[in-house]
Length: 104
Image 1 (spheres, helix red, strand yellow):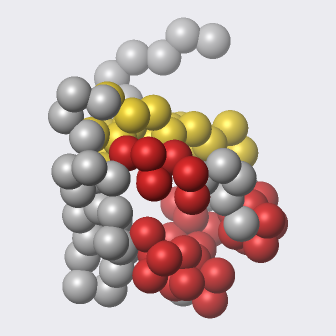
Image 2: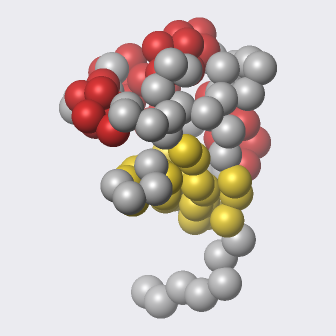
């Protein structure tokens, strides 16, 4: 199991809608995440800055990367692109964080 953390950014005024769309996220997306070895996935919002902190435990980096190529992930990104900063392929702009400390 690998721990993965990254930052994303919402567009101003989109906090409530972002939360609404995640409660709950699509069951098909949950199934794809689980099928690709993702567990213990959380996203936290820093309300003052519109910054999102995401944490997930993944089975492998290869499986994690495969998620982006699934039809459901492509649809989710298109569904969310109006709420957050995205890349040309609609994927969220994300800054990967390196783990520097962990305590079990």
